[in-house]
Amino acid sequence: MPEVGLVLAVQFDMAKFVNIDRDTPMLLPPDMRDWVPSSHLVHFMIDAIESVDTSMVQINHRGTGSKQYPPAMLLALLVYSYCTGMFSSRQIERSSHTDVAVRFLCANTHPDHDTICTFRRNNGALLHRAFAQILEMAAQCGVLKVGQVTVAIDGTKVLANASKHAAVSYGYAEQKLNDLDMEIKELLVKAEQADSTPLQDGLTILDEVQRREERQAALRRAKVEMEARAYARFQAESAQYDAKMVKREALVDSGKKPRGREPKAPSAAPEAKDQVNFTDEESRIMKTKDGFQQCYNAQAGVETDSRLIVGQRVSQSPNDKQELAEDLKAVKENVSPAIVLVDSGFVSESAVSTVEA
Image 1 (spheres, helix red, strand yellow):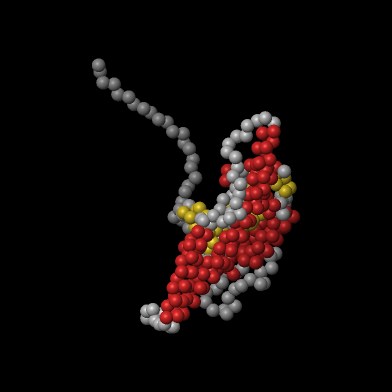
Image 2 (cartoon, one colour):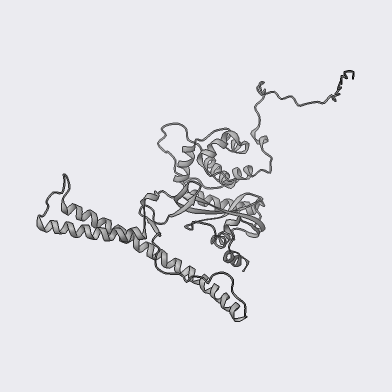
């Protein structure tokens, strides 16, 4: 068979391409306002912050060191960043280099994360007041719709300023109190035999007794707090338990067999695993991507078109199962939602029933 050669002829159209030149510098400086559309949220944010009173902001009045960033710019940067889902100070710093809208807002300057974080910590009241004013202005200007809007709600764990190792459980507290009682009795017996006899260099019996009594007092306060939490939990669970039992009794009366196990009656007694933190009693142990940590559960509702935060609150609940009703209450202070978007972490029978009602 003779060898056959195939010749493929490909004909290209004479297409025209944009010249991509990254080496030649711009002959004229660009106008940064052209970098983002005129309808972009960042334009509204810059204008809105100009009307916020920043006279009480905490700044360095000594006139030493490097020049400071204007408070209005830092305030606009934080509010815009939070509205668009950027919360980390380091992430906001990076966005001043990589995000066109943020770069425009900062006028091509780049505040470092320490400056951003310090401004937020020192001016929390101003941030809270500015959020409320901006929501009012957004509604008046039509940037934010206040009726029949779509709101997305979600939560995130925020680390408390406390170590989980500073926490004590109810079971451990009871055991430790008994141990301390025994230790104090033994020390007092020794004190009767030889008052102020040194136990070791720098320690005396009376000092050791006092140290243990202080520890006992702290443990008793922790127990009281855990007992109060357990009673509050008992009151909340009792209502749910009663509602479930009423349903089961209604099924039995109608001749139907209830499904599943009979609900367990709640108890007002604390569980052995219940915990309280000595450093921050209001925080709770919560599951995070980095394991169990001492945290708060921060909740936020965002209007999807404007991406403005229209409701926020902080919870002590380790999950979102019971947060939907309270989140909606916070959202309704500013807007009237027609559609609410949540993930499966918020869904429970009681939560959906409450919202529907």
